[in-house]
Length: 326
Length: 294
Image (cartoon, rainbow over all chains, first blue to last red; front, side, top):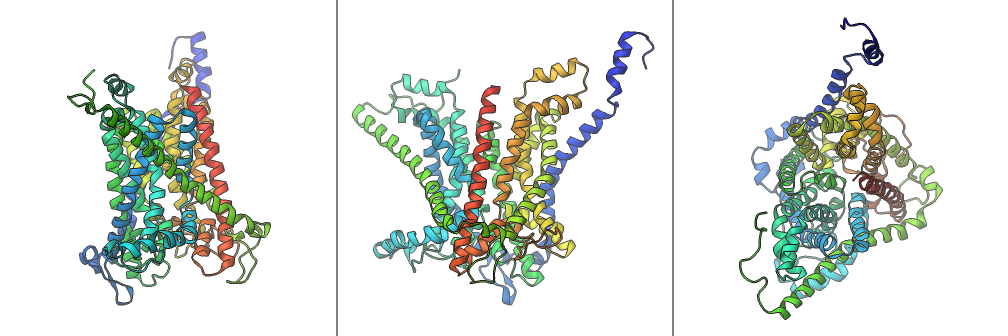
């Protein structure tokens, strides 16, 4: 309470008339609560899914991770075929997406003139905007038949003795899943790599050029080593996206719990078995086992994401918001 | 300045300039090829959606309910209605939480706290959407004993939160500190300065971020499978199973009937146009905004 009379006090009362003093703590509490909700969501995800999969965990035991039998009728639930399918498709897709995606990023940052970099960059970002289910539809009716006729049959006829190209080429299978996943992981890798490369100081390039390096040598010795950990982060982020991708893969992979090296074989992934079998899961145990796969998927992707963000932040702090958009 | 990382001790790339030039040309060609390879799928997908979807696109598609399997005609009206309701409700639930969280990160959390929450928000953004569907299943469907539009909307709300929170955070960061100081100088407490001055200044950017989030959740299928489930008749009740465009596309694409496939393409065309229009619009606004603030 002010005891000094006069103008300053009147101004103070005027100013304070519309705002109770507890406005600040209330607002602060409100926004604090909101961000706490975000943090609580991550904990809640883990807790709720873990609680729902308890029945499965108790029944399936450790064989869940190591066995390859998935036989709902006889209540045998072992997830190895799905883990294998996820690792096989996401891993192969990541290698391809890294080759193309990092290439695109270098092209956009260091080679392309602005009039070309802008639209090409936008088109790569648009790849991420197309819904997964639309890629799946395209995969079933356009990509799979094309792959069968122009890739799988020729490969089978010439290199069919290799384990990768054995079996019946029918289009739907691991290869189609790998191609669709590559397309979907590509924008993540390309956009994050682009931001990381753009964050490399221009002096790195000037130094190499001043020593007489060609454009490619400048990139190879001046730019890429500096951006290495960020590009690795981009790749890991792409891996997380590939591992969690559901619809497009479910639609083209054939959904059979087979462990096979062949690109022509049908397969199954962790995400697609949940999407595909959840509505058929009539028993509690079956449903709980699918949720157990979901729990495994969640923990793996949380870990992959955390590592990726940390690596990217080391190079280009704050740039991951772009990958949230992509 | 320290020595640049990665530089070799000897002459760069050896002394054979002809070979070095050839390598340079080859690598530049390969990098250009990578860029070409990256945009080919986009062109192909868009072209096929347009070519296959356009013939089946008509008013009946969005005004009529599905007819029994295999019969010609009918439409995907339940999916259109369901998508509008669930995306709308999901946005309404998720956006306020996200904007408030974004405000906390940028205006209150301070250096280390802000970094920690940003990290968690980014991690949440990377969680597979199918597991978010499982979460909503365990949280709402199991206790209530029924698949419902509400559960679908909650799943979509969780997906939109990290997107909008991070954009709010970024957009608030573009508002110059002098704007806040001017408000403080007038004796306005921080929270009112944020609500009345800073937030309106960042308003357009935040709105475009919300649109981007809407575009994203409108295309989500996986989180709706075990929450909204799908429905053959138009339903506006949040307590009952509800259809959605992506769900319907999935069902029709996996089915054996030509009429289903045609409608799946047409529904995809609607979805893609919607999503691309939203994304392009927001990107242009965001880009212009970021530039004018720099």
